[in-house]
Length: 291
Image (cartoon, rainbow, N blue to C red; front, side, top):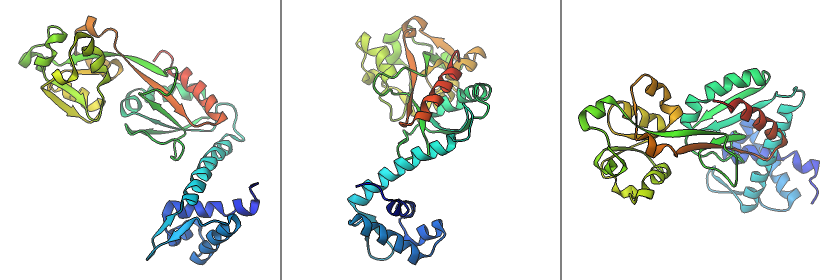
């Protein structure tokens, strides 16, 4: 079925209804009456010859399977079209880059990257979102994401060494691990909802399972781990860029350098399938060089 302009014209109204889950709210969003909104949806259903919305008791409604399929595809296409509109009438390096990053990367590295982007692409507008939750690029506001897990054979955007650190306060109260086999005798700071891959990479080759760590404190994110380590609550494995300033100021000390020298933490780029994203990726990778 070839998309008809008469069908396409109804889709923004259907999108508003799917977003608000209310004919009244959708009508207000589109600046029309509720009766006009009902007409738009009814006309769309008649032209497609299928039911898209099930009206339930009260003001509740539910999308049918067909409605879900249609709205998901429409939102994806609308997102790609929006990118084209952003890019039109802009010189190379212009437009809007909407990017989501983990908290540590966004807080500590993105300011430096944004400064470089300002020089590389002065007309580029950047909208930054920092969260450790993985956003769905196909349905969210964000077009690109930096993640600590890679898809397929992606080349890392940035890789940092990982170091084992502790504070002077912890050292004074508990001493420091003499070697890896001494780790189970210390309090270890671990990240919440993590598979602890870096710790496993460090301990498993020495026949030390993660379960050997009996004394541990669980924290929500990398920044919290760093602050807990500075307070002397335990030892932590952290990307070097997170603790570089604290190490330079001697607030934290690197432990077992030889044993941890091979550890690294990489960040990878995910993006929606749109031509403009290739340009943005090129500029972003250039800005990340020699961080």
